[in-house]
Length: 117
Image (cartoon, rainbow, N blue to C red; front, side, top):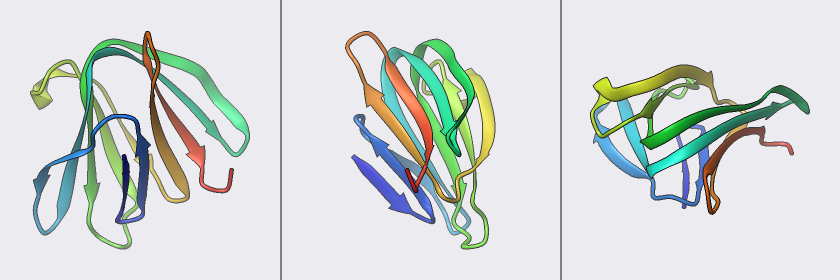
């Protein structure tokens, strides 16, 4: 599944659902079905880190502003459907980046990569 709006580009083997939208922002939920999430980043051909692993992840919540001049998203790694169950959250400037979420047999992986790659 692909989400490509408001300068955000996500390619996912999982569904991408809009769970909230108003005139200012939009929340996307990507259910991962209580899988282990391996998170890695390769930006400008340098690894920032190898893998950060989150076990038993219900899903990812991605909150973005709908403004054309704002390319920041907040990503929440959720233990269950409730936002208060956030295991970790971080902000990301997604301009010129692709978020890729891939399903493997024993885990899933989220990669952040340059659009140019």
